[in-house]
Amino acid sequence: MQIPAKPKPAKKPPNHERWVISYADLLTLLLALFVVLYASSTRDKQKLAAEAQSLTKAFHGTPIAVVNHNTAGRGIMPHQISAIPTPKPTPSVAKPPVVTPNPMPPPVKDESHLPKALSSKMESEMLALQKVEAELKSVLQPLTAKNQVSMKAEPLTLTIQLNDSVLFPSGQAILIPQAQALLDQVADRLAKLPSAFNIVIQGFTDNQPIDTLQFPSNWSLSAERAATVVELFATKSIDGTRLSAQGFAEFAPIASNATPDGRAQNRRVSIIIHAPDPP
Image 1 (spheres, rainbow, N blue to C red):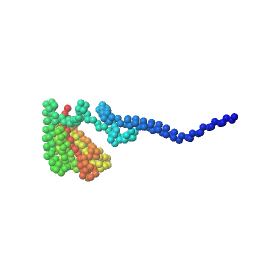
Image 2: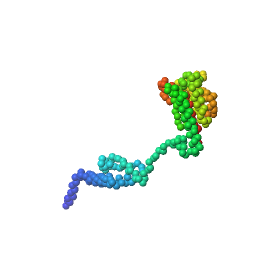
Image 3: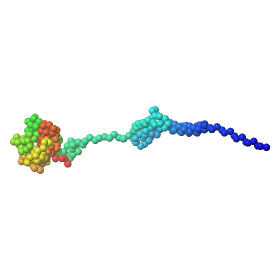
Image 4: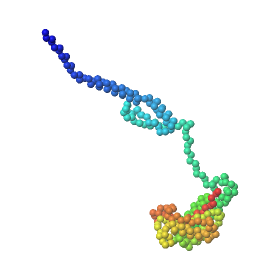
């Protein structure tokens, strides 16, 4: 008896929809991820602002930046950043305003703190200088009217500025006759000052170079002119210990050297009378 063969099971058709399961798992994971990110991006705005302000107050540093949700995106998208305004300091921690002190007044204007004898001495020196100033104004008035001489008075200093054309020929350090007569009158007035007064003569030139056998530079010309005036004053009963000469060449201009008028102003001699400095 022949046993019939067991029929072979029919082949199942291939399942082409298995990818749906993996895709659904992936979507579930992504959904969970975005839920977490969304939750972390929607923190309490008021709580965050309060924390930032408290940190700013504590450290007085640069304000912390927070997200402006009015214009920012959500989730992991980039946010627009703005800075929290620095809170106004409370009165308890406010710094006092910085006050710039006024410059100290000259000692001569604060005589109430000086010994009576010293105050009286300074007053006497000021009066002596004012008297000499008045006399010199009268002597120099014709030249002052022509803008060839100027005077500047301070409490304990008098400065007389003379154009070089009043005193010297161009490029020389020998006084013209009119200058010697003028300086004789100035010296006579300066000799009346108390012996403690110092007299400084300063010479200045323009920036035009000079190169002669006698004056190889403007330094030598300006210094020699100042020394010439000092030597004349020394012959007029003014103690040499009170006199000094200084040459500045072209390095202390009072006007532009670009024009003839400016150069003429820079060529000058200054006579500076100093009262003794208070102790």
